[in-house]
Image 1 (cartoon, rainbow, N blue to C red):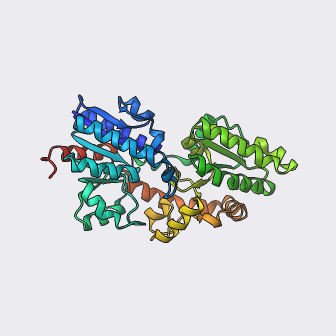
Image 2 (cartoon, rainbow, N blue to C red; image 1 turned 90 degrees about the horizontal axis):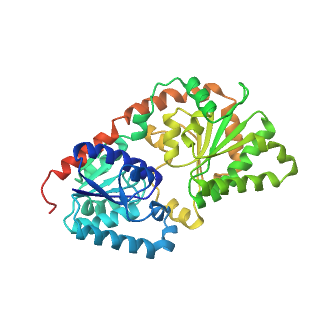
Image 3 (tube, rainbow, N blue to C red; image 1 turned 120 degrees about the vertical axis):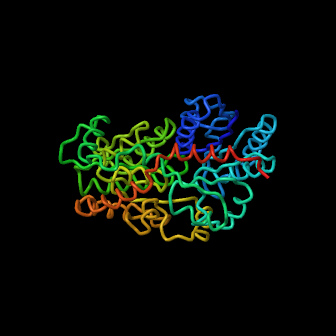
Length: 395
């Protein structure tokens, strides 16, 4: 049995690996082929191209990669025409995966999309294209299912795998201390730690890291006891971030003394958040991780000028940070595009750091949300896919 899968991001690689393990329990002899990352490869997945070739965000940015993406789509269609899979599972990356799913669905192949596109936020007309291309939508969050029910599209909320892997009631002080020891942060007991996470992509880092670093330097002038931890997604981002840090410190000779107040890490983002008192980060999956770890956060969202111009005209929701979306209210501060300035962020960050009551007040809300999405996602997804596969041929 062949099961086709395509993941284009690190988060999709994590979801894909968990789904592969759960499906293997049901289909031990199954082969998994398509596009995936290192975690999926560790599960015996066969990828026809490095996953990074699909890692592109925004409305405008993919245009420069269009010939390559079209060629990859043709290669996958050819591969799955020659050897028909029992099901195709596109994991996130909707711009690519939904188009591929449509072509495969037209060939009579059953199709699943894992992680709902943000049709509830923008591009709601996309729901009609999804209805033609997808036999089953797997969502991570309960609030996402309504729009699919309204359109008669089969949908199943599986919860989020990250919520399954974190104890919602873990001892926060003990977890923070353990993470600090693991990262080798031998700091004085009264010192506060802030995790800076400006993103995992080159362009994202280029837009947010300079602002985050200037924010940190302003905060250090007011609070010299602070320590900043900066985890990097890979070696390329590590090199980029170290260069940006050197540039920020070089802007003022007085800043050189603050170099020891920064710890740049290769990976270990989860541990960096767990070790922190506060997190300043780019909007995305990391905001969910911070919420599951019960860490107060300030969320930033900054796109290229053209992408922002388009997005600002399409977005239909008042909040973009996942904790706020899941809560249905503004729990954590979020700053978009031109509002992302070192002056604003440093003021906000210092205010939160000096107010333990405000930070602790988030705990109950974060715990409630955590439990609502802790549903054993890998097994839920595998069960839903297995049920689809047992049905008759796609019409």
